[in-house]
Length: 124
Image 1: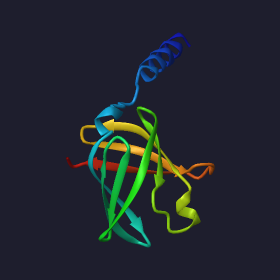
Image 2: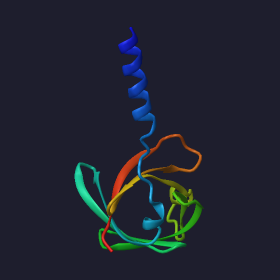
Image 3: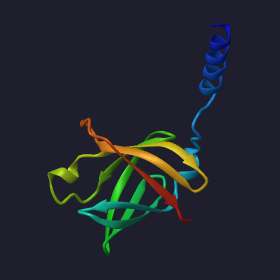
């Protein structure tokens, strides 16, 4: 029983000290790529972000959004030229982890519970 207690204590100590890397400042600006599946096809989106604007390039078209940073790792993305009501809602973006030139993020429409995750690669 004593060995079990010591083993469990050691395991708790080791896992409680682990914290995912989050160097969000490194990803505040730059050029990025994001791949996802859309209707069964792997598609790539490229985007350029500065402190307050993000320009997305998808299938030969550019789309511009404003950025409002909530903290170092979270921001709201609002389409500047929405084409329909769905595009009028801002998207909440949250960087969860960073590693080298990539970050994992979670995103969803503001006010909705459905969230999705993805990974972005910083190319410049």
